[in-house]
Length: 474
Ligand code: UDP
Ligand code: G50
Image 1: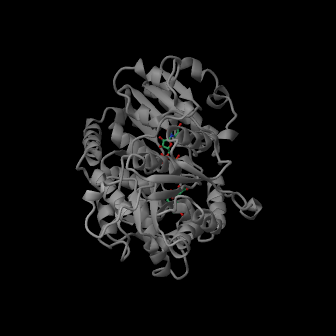
Image 2 (image 1 turned 135 degrees about the horizontal axis):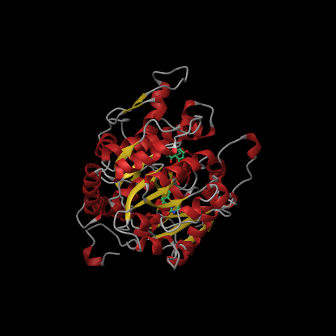
Image 3 (image 1 turned 60 degrees about the horizontal axis):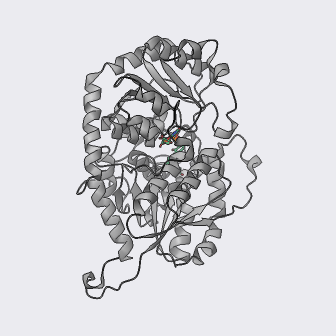
């Protein structure tokens, strides 16, 4: 808090602002929240976090626990959801269902937050809840409401423009290519699969959220200037939609304190990486919730084997981690683990991916291009070989390529297509990109830009300062 003599005339010493965070579900959404909370906690701000238990996955529960242990001054506001009849949404993704139940329980947040002490001054919500939370925060509680957008700003531009696209060219609601003004044209095949169906649960949430954006007080963006300059400028300049709220680019955000599951010890992936030569290891991971089919897993294994490189492979076979009970040797087939002993490490456990991508032994990242993975690869200066699977991954891949982080295998399979990518093709591509010095030099430059953005005076540093000043002036 500023000493009284530093306050300008008419200004009163109001005490630290009390900011309430309303995170959603899925590690790709929670990690940027937790990282932003960690960053804000060093700015003389009171923080509360709305917490829903039980979480969908074990990884989420571990990371909530780690946050409250690492930052004991943060208050936890327990939020009980109304029951949701999941049978009304047959086959729906468990995270979309959790988002829906958060959205349908949002009206309970008004009374819950009105009673908070000290009284609140601002709310930061996840985008998945935006259209439900903004009216409660603005109209009932009369507080400011910012949205933290965990995916790419390129994806945000699509989300902001999509309702206009539906209303305008397309009275029959048949979705085709979408040309986002000032950003780029997304082919139909690049859009999240769900958006092809206007009745899909995700699509309904996505469109409602996009329609609510102009009522927000601002957006916190998980990106930095040099990575997505066009999308940031197009939103700021009102090209995507008129009157888009102010945006604050805050990435790359530092990691929070590691969860217990991430502790480094003998036999851990980090200890194994320490023994490998510089840039010799291919890191393979498809985020928290990509269930690659068994046949495709076997082809990836064959590709890694024929590539002859060392590798670290984080293998998940289910959407929800606690359902992942299969044995690695059964998934990978006869003798693979024995043959790869010493050359490759395969794990189903949670790894500290940020630390992996900052390790000098890692030379390539075969990834689904989840946005946090892209930003972490940029920070580590590790070229990304993108194999998008579903949702926002292909949109992110367009931003990843133009941002200079790596290459995108556009014709490799996408969920819903019944097509295997052969081990031979995977192995060849891995060899090619491992040897590509042009890609490596470009990502090394992006790495420098990422470091500059958060260093004193950099674009993300200044954005963070501006955001904190706005909170304190409220
Ligand atoms: N992650 C990790 N260890 C794991 C799996 C995932 O640290 O074993 C982190 C990863 O570093 C990233 C996030 O989880 O920060 C995943 O988000 P992303 O947007 O890349 O993909 P998603 O999981 O949402 O598809
Ligand atoms: C999962 C997914 C598709 C997808 C995203 C996922 C995003 C994009 C951001 O997390 O994160 C976003 C999500 C929900 C929403 C608005 C914007 O209502 O399968 O695009």
